[in-house]
Amino acid sequence: MEREFLYDQEHVIVETDKGKVRGYRYDGISIFKGIPYARARRFHAPEPMEPWEHVLDATSYGYVCPLLEMGKPGGELMVPHRYWVMDEDCQNLNIWTPECDDEKRPVLVWLHGGGFEAGSAIEQIAYEGENMCREGHTGVVSINHRLNILGYFDLSDYGEEYANSGNAGGDDIVAALRWIHENIASFGGDPENVTIFGQSGGGSKVTVLLQTPAADGLYAKGINMSGTIDQLFAESQDTGEELARAVMAQLGIHGDVKELEQTPYAAFAEAYKRVKPQLAAE
Image (cartoon, rainbow, N blue to C red):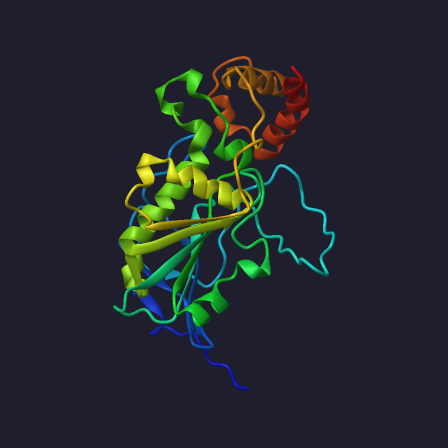
């Protein structure tokens, strides 16, 4: 059976609020990958993208958030994983839609699992939205955002600029939902009929969003698939200051906490992994 594939300089182009993006069409579905929805400095809130003048190529998945541990393939026969290029510039999303028209279809936004620490929007082939888009006649969006020490490292004791550093990953998700609300109509979706859904850690993200005032009005429904926050986080009476001091000591940083913003991620992650067991035991 022949399958349609279309990618050229004139088709599958959509105007967003920051500029045009070009995707491709495959077997009756228009697909856009790696669209940036925000940008952010380490530990800081996401900011809107600057407009671009050229047509942005949206045919390849964007960076995924760097992970604390390199994945070791195992059990791939039953649950095949995909390992992708990692970078802190990971605020991007992917869209599958039957048509880029004005029909205003329901929109499903997938939040990946990984316990706020690992995973990505493309970690598993099942995360692709093509079949759900085709069978459900709906738009499907998947999101990448900051994780682990990039998304949830609490430096709020160090000043107002780090006030929400302990939930920067959550801020990314809200920024993505805001982008979807403002742009999904151009991809044939209904911004007033957005359903967020996720499994495991993704389900926990749904629970968090239900309690996040900044996300109010950016989605209509939520589906939590086997993800609860109970027992997910270790109980602690301390702030993030003790952790930050311990990590900086491991790195030989004795001055301004801002030095952590420029520390190479690999060194930052190794220092965190060394001090984490000791602090967890206290």
